[in-house]
Length: 265
Ligand SMILES: C[S@@+](CC[C@H](N)C(=O)[O-])C[C@H]1O[C@@H](n2cnc3c(N)ncnc32)[C@H](O)[C@@H]1O
Image (cartoon, rainbow, N blue to C red):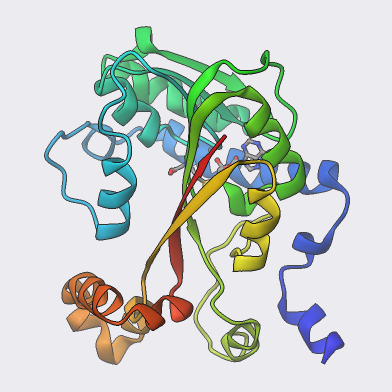
């Protein structure tokens, strides 16, 4: 069993060497950004206030509605989608990524969408930040925590947040470990980066040690099934089916594949 788990799990999740994990992440995301930088697609990057989001994103951004004038830390900002969104809502955003090429792309994105004056972009690891204590109102991230060492990043994020400040993340979740075993036999390509991997409820408990309270909202119950070709034509309906089911039958949250986490310092 242990050997099987070692084979199928993302081995980097177990690596104690944060430096090695960060190096591989940097290389992986630099390459991804490189492609977008060479061929900057304005259509993809143009900010649209009325863009429709799936329920988990809607919920995540609904927690960031009143951020005018607030100081936001965008963790693992990538190409800066959340950065631009928060800046458009009048926040002052400091955005970090470990990949220099991603930061270049985020800079281009901020310039293209005319929010550069509200945005401060830095190549920096969330696990070791050079900021003073207690300076941010919010720390946010989409697909961020599952790339990080939770002990180091939890401590750092809590340190730089003001007392009463919020850390809000939208992350992929592993409902059960045995599902990962089954998953390894299904011939659908894994899209995850070398240092990434889904989070379990136990991981979140570890992260929550650095905060006074936390709340969880669950998403994606059946959604993953709609990646199978035979079900793909129903994909557009899958979000609303999920949303209805999860809210109607609370026990289904155990089986969900994503969550929005809200921690308060
Ligand atoms: C899945 S992407 C998320 C990007 C972005 N939040 C979004 O919604 O598009 C993960 C990002 O985390 C960054 N990353 C990985 N490890 C990091 C670390 N230790 N500190 C900061 N950023 C990191 C990667 O370079 C990558 O850009």
